Image 1 (cartoon, rainbow, N blue to C red):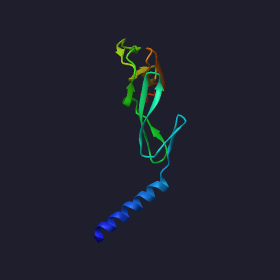
Image 2 (cartoon, rainbow, N blue to C red):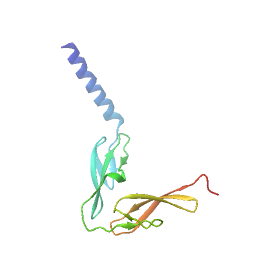
Image 3 (cartoon, rainbow, N blue to C red):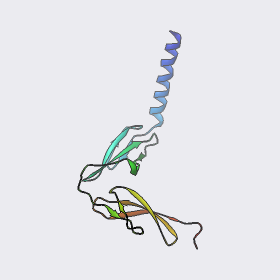
Length: 121
C-alpha cells in the first residue's frame, strides 16, 4: 500500500511540474493544449496534422497532410518533367541552391526553402 501511495504522489508531482513548465500552442489563431495532437486547415482541400510541443510551438510535418478533396492537379517537376502528387514535397537543384518545394492542389508549387550547396562556386 505504501508503494502505491508513493507512486501516486510521484505521478502528481510529475503532472504538476509538467503543467508549470509547459505552454499551450497558438496556431493560426487557435489555442491548443500542450502535448496534444490537432488538425488545422491549410486550404479548402487540405488539413494538416500537428502536434503541440511542451515549449508552446506547433509542429506540422508536411508528410502528415490530409487531402479532403479529390479534384487536385499534379505538379510537373521543373527538371525531370515527372508528375508530383498534390501536397507532396519535392527537391531540385537550381544553380548553386537546393530548393525544397511543396506541390499545391491547383498544380502550382511554392519553394520556400533554399539551401546553398557547399561544393558550388
